[in-house]
Structures are given as C-alpha cells and as structure tokens.
Image (cartoon, rainbow, N blue to C red; front, side, top):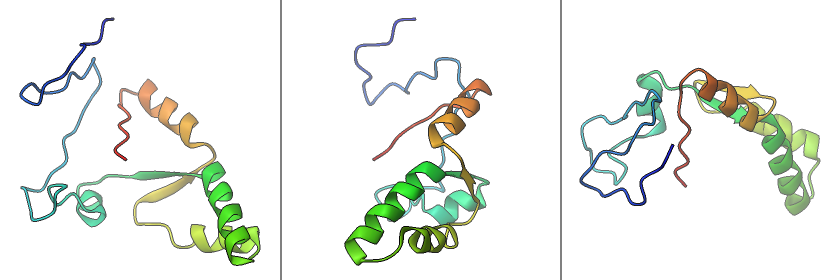
Length: 108
C-alpha cells in the first residue's frame, strides 16, 4: 500500500480501511474544539493506561521528590481519570485494538 506524500487540509485524511470516529461537540471556545476529557467520556471514550509507563513515571517522580516508587505508583493509580483502565503494556493494547479495526492516533 502506498501512502500519500502529502495530505492537505482540504482533503479528509485517509482511513486505510480502519474505523475512525471524529470527536467534537460543536466547536467550543477551546482550540481543541472543546474535546475535553469530560466531553470524551460522555461520548463513551475509554482510556487505556500503560502499567509499564506508570511504573516508570512513578520511579522518576519518586527520585525527584525523595519518595518511594511504590507509594507514588499507588497514588497515580488511585487517581486515574474516568473511563480509564490499567493495561499491562500500552503498545500491546494498541496492537490488540488495531487487530479489531481501530486506528491509533498520537496527538502530542
């Protein structure tokens, strides 16, 4: 499969056979079209949180705050956003979702 060299703003992005869902609630005041976490949750979006990365962040936060990694990890996991689920490995979860027809998009 050949990918287009350039996608213009006028043409919708290609889906390459994947199911896609454009999430917006009608163009609010925010630059992201009001796609807040609460708005996404109301639309039924679920979030997968990588356990491996959470352990890594917990270790880094613990080093900079003279804390214990296990205590920081517990704090992080007890304060997850709504509709989120811890998964052992985020990249594996993405792979499983793609096998079921979902597309991964990183916006960062």
